[in-house]
View (cartoon, rainbow, N blue to C red):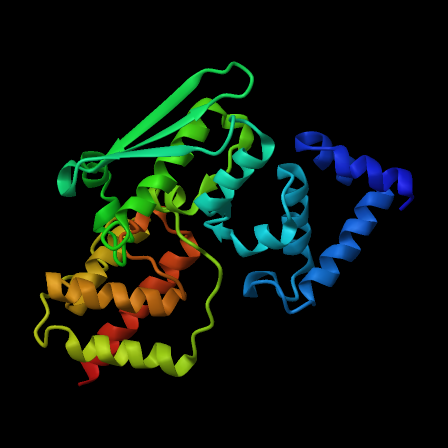
Length: 297
């Protein structure tokens, strides 16, 4: 790549940077080389290690956002096939681009259930002061504090800063993030990380055995073949769940743990309707196996 091309790339942002990368052969090839170096450097998160394609996408995004790729690699995630960034990155991008005059400020009021945080900033171009307030009532209604391991219970003020700042940016300068969502926002949409997790065969078998032993010894008798031809697989799974003994609140928790082990990711709270067909087939096979094992005892 020539010096002229290098200087040109440093001044491009947004879609211009993306098109310059995709349509300029020299730039594209150079980006590939850099992505390969990143992937084999040992200095990137696991999802980018030995994955030049993922590093290429990360470098491309860093160029579009105008931020250091090392920082982005540490704060970016694949969430259900969508790119999610940490709230700190979104705030850093807004501050770096000079969208607002100075950093976003935060004003806190109240305590406990009356606690609230107002993000305040001055838009650089218009000199207009803009605010966005989030209170504890919103936290409760959205259920942010009800998730397992929720930081809202241990560090609420920091979470108030992140949420209010992110909403302020998205409301008054949406072009800054180019449609990217934060990790928390994607989780709010009940989109889950589908990055495969290695699960040993022994672990999977142990989960099946534990579930079979924990299930009711006298499950409700339900026919799984009495539906109309072409019966929906979800209906079949629901019948198999009952036949396998997963028909109580206690056993529902056991069933959820089994699914996490079987599918290699956390699917707690995810509806069958939102799962891929391949996952549904695996769940169906698992339930059938449990029923067969119970029948042999």
